[in-house]
Image 1 (tube, helix red, strand yellow):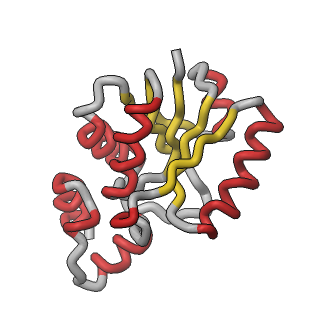
Image 2 (tube, rainbow, N blue to C red; image 1 turned 45 degrees about the horizontal axis):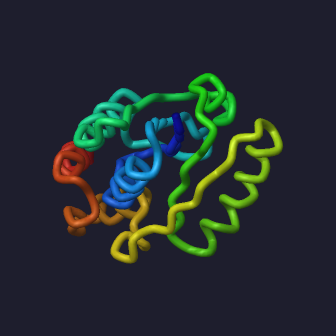
Image 3 (cartoon, helix red, strand yellow; image 1 turned 30 degrees about the vertical axis):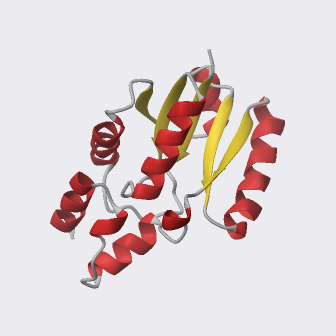
Length: 156
Protein backbone atom coordinates (compact mmCIF):
# COMPACT_ATOMS: atom_id res chain seq x y z
CA UNK A 1 0.00 0.00 0.00
CA UNK A 2 1.34 3.43 -0.90
CA UNK A 3 0.83 6.00 1.81
CA UNK A 4 1.75 9.66 1.42
CA UNK A 5 1.72 12.67 3.72
CA UNK A 6 0.70 16.11 2.43
CA UNK A 7 1.99 18.47 5.13
CA UNK A 8 1.29 22.14 5.64
CA UNK A 9 0.06 24.83 7.93
CA UNK A 10 -3.24 25.16 6.02
CA UNK A 11 -4.11 28.49 7.65
CA UNK A 12 -6.57 28.49 5.95
CA UNK A 13 -6.81 25.65 3.42
CA UNK A 14 -7.13 27.08 -0.10
CA UNK A 15 -8.34 25.80 -3.45
CA UNK A 16 -4.69 25.19 -4.26
CA UNK A 17 -4.42 22.85 -1.28
CA UNK A 18 -7.65 21.13 -2.30
CA UNK A 19 -6.28 20.58 -5.82
CA UNK A 20 -3.17 18.89 -4.40
CA UNK A 21 -5.31 16.75 -2.08
CA UNK A 22 -7.46 15.58 -5.00
CA UNK A 23 -4.48 14.78 -7.21
CA UNK A 24 -2.59 13.01 -4.43
CA UNK A 25 -5.72 10.98 -3.65
CA UNK A 26 -5.66 9.74 -7.25
CA UNK A 27 -1.96 8.88 -7.09
CA UNK A 28 -1.70 7.09 -3.73
CA UNK A 29 -3.64 4.41 -1.88
CA UNK A 30 -3.83 6.63 1.20
CA UNK A 31 -3.08 10.31 1.79
CA UNK A 32 -2.68 11.89 5.20
CA UNK A 33 -3.18 15.64 5.15
CA UNK A 34 -1.06 16.66 8.12
CA UNK A 35 -1.26 20.08 9.67
CA UNK A 36 1.68 20.91 11.83
CA UNK A 37 3.10 23.52 14.11
CA UNK A 38 5.40 25.90 12.24
CA UNK A 39 6.94 28.36 14.66
CA UNK A 40 7.89 30.77 11.86
CA UNK A 41 4.28 31.31 10.80
CA UNK A 42 1.69 33.35 12.68
CA UNK A 43 -1.61 31.48 12.48
CA UNK A 44 -5.15 32.82 12.35
CA UNK A 45 -6.78 29.45 13.06
CA UNK A 46 -5.92 27.05 15.84
CA UNK A 47 -4.94 23.48 15.09
CA UNK A 48 -8.40 22.09 15.91
CA UNK A 49 -10.05 24.61 13.57
CA UNK A 50 -7.64 23.70 10.78
CA UNK A 51 -8.26 19.99 11.34
CA UNK A 52 -12.02 20.59 11.14
CA UNK A 53 -11.72 22.59 7.90
CA UNK A 54 -9.41 20.01 6.32
CA UNK A 55 -11.64 17.12 7.39
CA UNK A 56 -14.62 18.83 5.77
CA UNK A 57 -12.95 19.62 2.46
CA UNK A 58 -11.26 16.20 2.24
CA UNK A 59 -14.50 14.30 2.97
CA UNK A 60 -15.20 13.47 -0.71
CA UNK A 61 -11.96 11.47 -0.89
CA UNK A 62 -12.37 8.10 0.83
CA UNK A 63 -8.61 7.49 0.94
CA UNK A 64 -7.74 10.79 2.60
CA UNK A 65 -7.55 11.39 6.32
CA UNK A 66 -6.38 14.35 8.37
CA UNK A 67 -3.75 14.32 11.07
CA UNK A 68 -1.52 16.66 12.98
CA UNK A 69 2.12 16.59 13.92
CA UNK A 70 4.60 18.47 16.04
CA UNK A 71 8.30 18.10 15.41
CA UNK A 72 10.09 16.68 12.43
CA UNK A 73 7.90 15.73 9.50
CA UNK A 74 10.02 12.66 8.80
CA UNK A 75 9.35 11.37 12.32
CA UNK A 76 5.63 11.72 11.64
CA UNK A 77 6.05 9.91 8.31
CA UNK A 78 7.84 7.04 10.05
CA UNK A 79 5.16 6.83 12.74
CA UNK A 80 2.47 6.69 10.02
CA UNK A 81 4.47 4.28 7.84
CA UNK A 82 4.35 6.78 4.97
CA UNK A 83 7.13 6.54 2.41
CA UNK A 84 6.30 9.69 0.46
CA UNK A 85 5.81 13.38 1.19
CA UNK A 86 3.65 15.30 -1.28
CA UNK A 87 4.38 18.99 -1.87
CA UNK A 88 2.59 21.38 -4.19
CA UNK A 89 4.77 23.81 -6.13
CA UNK A 90 3.53 27.19 -7.32
CA UNK A 91 6.78 28.56 -8.72
CA UNK A 92 10.49 28.13 -9.11
CA UNK A 93 10.97 29.80 -5.75
CA UNK A 94 8.88 27.06 -4.12
CA UNK A 95 11.02 24.47 -5.90
CA UNK A 96 14.27 26.00 -4.68
CA UNK A 97 13.07 25.90 -1.07
CA UNK A 98 11.30 22.53 -1.24
CA UNK A 99 14.15 20.73 -3.02
CA UNK A 100 16.51 21.44 -0.14
CA UNK A 101 13.87 20.24 2.34
CA UNK A 102 13.24 17.10 0.27
CA UNK A 103 16.92 16.28 0.16
CA UNK A 104 17.27 16.76 3.92
CA UNK A 105 14.18 14.67 4.61
CA UNK A 106 15.49 11.87 2.40
CA UNK A 107 18.91 11.99 4.03
CA UNK A 108 17.38 11.85 7.51
CA UNK A 109 14.88 9.09 6.86
CA UNK A 110 14.81 7.73 3.32
CA UNK A 111 11.36 9.28 2.80
CA UNK A 112 10.98 10.59 -0.74
CA UNK A 113 9.18 13.75 -1.82
CA UNK A 114 6.88 14.02 -4.82
CA UNK A 115 6.33 17.50 -6.23
CA UNK A 116 2.98 18.33 -7.83
CA UNK A 117 2.99 21.52 -9.87
CA UNK A 118 0.00 23.65 -9.08
CA UNK A 119 -2.82 24.12 -11.53
CA UNK A 120 -2.25 27.46 -13.31
CA UNK A 121 -5.40 28.99 -11.85
CA UNK A 122 -4.00 28.41 -8.35
CA UNK A 123 -0.39 29.42 -8.98
CA UNK A 124 -0.63 32.75 -7.17
CA UNK A 125 -2.74 31.59 -4.23
CA UNK A 126 -1.20 31.30 -0.78
CA UNK A 127 -2.89 31.22 2.60
CA UNK A 128 -0.91 34.27 3.69
CA UNK A 129 -1.90 36.32 0.64
CA UNK A 130 -5.55 35.29 0.93
CA UNK A 131 -5.61 36.37 4.59
CA UNK A 132 -3.98 39.70 3.75
CA UNK A 133 -6.43 40.47 0.94
CA UNK A 134 -9.39 39.45 3.13
CA UNK A 135 -8.19 41.64 6.03
CA UNK A 136 -8.11 44.59 3.64
CA UNK A 137 -11.66 43.90 2.49
CA UNK A 138 -10.83 42.31 -0.85
CA UNK A 139 -12.80 39.46 -2.39
CA UNK A 140 -11.26 36.03 -1.74
CA UNK A 141 -14.19 33.66 -2.28
CA UNK A 142 -12.73 32.38 -5.56
CA UNK A 143 -9.59 31.16 -3.78
CA UNK A 144 -11.16 29.11 -0.98
CA UNK A 145 -13.63 26.26 -0.57
CA UNK A 146 -16.98 27.88 0.38
CA UNK A 147 -17.02 26.56 3.96
CA UNK A 148 -13.47 27.83 4.53
CA UNK A 149 -14.40 31.22 3.09
CA UNK A 150 -17.23 31.53 5.62
CA UNK A 151 -14.88 30.66 8.48
CA UNK A 152 -12.26 33.11 7.30
CA UNK A 153 -14.72 35.98 7.12
CA UNK A 154 -16.02 35.12 10.60
CA UNK A 155 -12.49 35.03 12.01
CA UNK A 156 -11.44 38.44 10.72
